[in-house]
Image 1 (cartoon, rainbow, N blue to C red):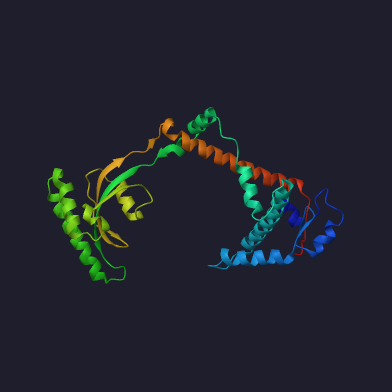
Image 2: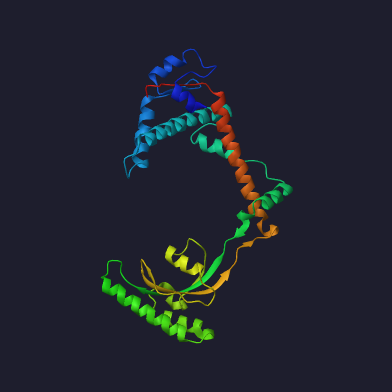
Amino acid sequence: MILTLALASVTAPGAPPEGAERAAASFAVVGGEAISQEEYQSALHEGMRRKFFHGAPSREQVDAYRREVAQGLIDRVLLRQEARRRGLEGDDLLRRLEESVRRVPEPAAEEVRNYYDAHPEKFTAPERLRVSLILLKVEPSATGAAWRAAEAEAARLVEKLLKTEPERRGEEFAGLARLHSGDVSASRGGDLGYVHKGMLAGEAQQVLDGMRPGDISVPLLLLQGVAVLRLEERVAPALSVFDAAKTRARDLLARERGGEAWQALIERLRRETPVTINEKL
């Protein structure tokens, strides 16, 4: 592998005799093409600023990132050389090379079916919850008294709802949402529609996980204020039938094979191309 060579600073078998001399004046020589010290230092400096903007990295992190930058520069040269060998010209060589390599033959029908059968998780709709909300808005910077008042008002609404006959609670909840909720869903009676995990605040999701359709939550303190939830419906995960999923299965399989073809090209170029690296850098 090239990065192993970089750490050892040796010339790969088959490198031209002058490779070591050129490497002494450059960061690296890749298949006879030099990468300047300035290019390496510039890429490293700019990358370090972005990657470690929020803190001081450890020595191990810096070393790992140096190797990452080195490999990225070397790979770009390898791919540019391959693009020229394939007769590609002009600007944007790498993009056109990658597009051509990733453009693999369309999978056969049997392959698509086998991919669908082997990866049911890719074609299963996650659990969905239909939820209604009453949100008593409180500014995050408000006093503790304001938050306590909102929490007391939410508790009063929950008590009123629980005293309502079960078959009328949905209608009552919608009416209270229109009157009291500060959320945009108020005009719809608090109806948020169908949501899945990741769409709601963690505290709300945790409470909903333990609720059954028709249940009403205790008042919840969220960033936007105090909330009361009603679970309207729980829709279990469902595997899409093959006829409905086959287009997606075909596209996913083709994309995966394209990615494998691209990675295989990079790995082959790394193996076959002589590289010399200046160990002092």
